Length: 608
Image (cartoon, rainbow, N blue to C red; front, side, top):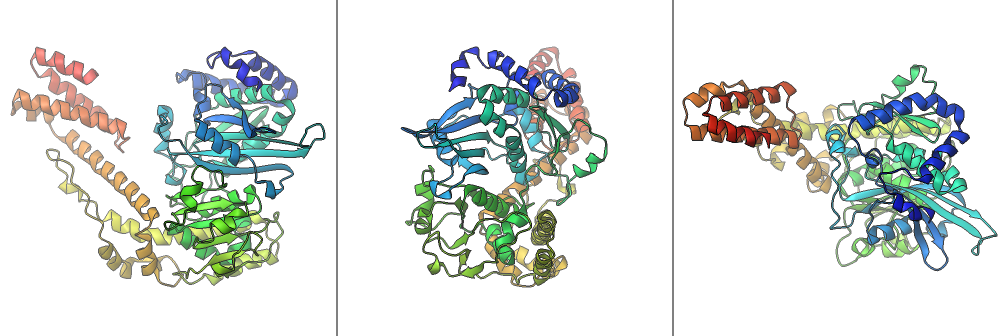
């Protein structure tokens, strides 16, 4: 609780802990810090030159850092929130408390890492970080922030300690963020959590000061992120990257002597390790995730449940999974009643659970994956079978996929043989993951390309865009019209997999994933039409037009053009920079051609 007493020093000033932390950092790793010093100074100066305030750099990556401990009278309790000015509602704190500790039956001794996701309290003011908004448009859709949810990245330690009444030391260091960069934040925790448990709050404040000096999480740029004497090198993907590729590896050939950790990915999990017990059914699970079916993962510990849920969500990439998913869900969660009620059909959500209570509470759910302990790389667990739901009585039931679902597509036996051969030859898990990820990617792309092709046909022809009329509307999406296109331009052009593709599409068109995907595409296409309309306006001789129209009509045109500029800026329309400049030149020329009294009024209007 020591940090709470320092709140008086305020977020805008560096208190004694900052100096202590900085001094501590210098003592701990002088050689590595010296190597990264120049880099850190450059990036800090860069941040300050962008006009960032204290903690703006930190807020671009994290909402806050929490320390959750166990109190004999209160149970789990948030001991520290840092920075002190970070705001969490009581409901959010309660969720963080319960989600930061494994269930008592998990028996997690030593250090455990996992991830959870929880709903932001309603009524909370959504903080719009304008700096981040401009980067958001360049991210792949599956890495964009969800304004309604936080992620919690946990490093939990439980060790025997005879000096404590319970006989155990139990504490979690938790990073709360809007960013779904699972691998990145788990790596950050691996760097700082073990030392934090030894050195406590001064070390934590020093680590947060380092994060505050990081450059913003800009997609496509190689970032060097120093933290407590270690420099991490990362690259956040962009929506322009070719799916299934990683570009950071190509950048590691140069001699980066100050780099300590290179991350090939910020968000991906070890796909094969998670799917390993069920890889024979991976295509069926892909269908269930694609269709947004209610799905429960029952696992022995939060690390297994969270990794498996995140792998499931990841398997339909580059499509975004639009329904809710909870990598680790407990009976104390604020949505527990909403998600376990029997008065209505189970919602479209993927839950990861460890408490045996859920085996009874969720036995009415249509699809349940029961997994055992995930084996370390190189060890292969026995393949589970698909079983009927009535056979699932308790969490002690044998591992298996409990469902009566009949897949629409025939299983790709070729990929299964390839993976099985890899198992027999003890192929590394990373290599197996590459094969599985490519397989899922090709499957998803084969499925989505016909939809993309049809939706592109809904776009009006460019010749129908007139500068003097509102931009034309997109044609309506007609399911039956789309189905007719599949005969000649369906997934059979790119996939060898046979089966009832038509049935799969019909089911998908009723799912939350289709709804979310189509809304995103419709918004992008509408913005493209607005951008084309702007370009058409710029090509016109607007000054010549005003000479043939009244002052009232000219003033109306200026105001409309000004609104177009504001819209292009606000909605990040895909407009070329010279188009915006041309439009501003048009507006200035039209205003200067008007009487002086009107010029003064319009110039003021344009400036505001």
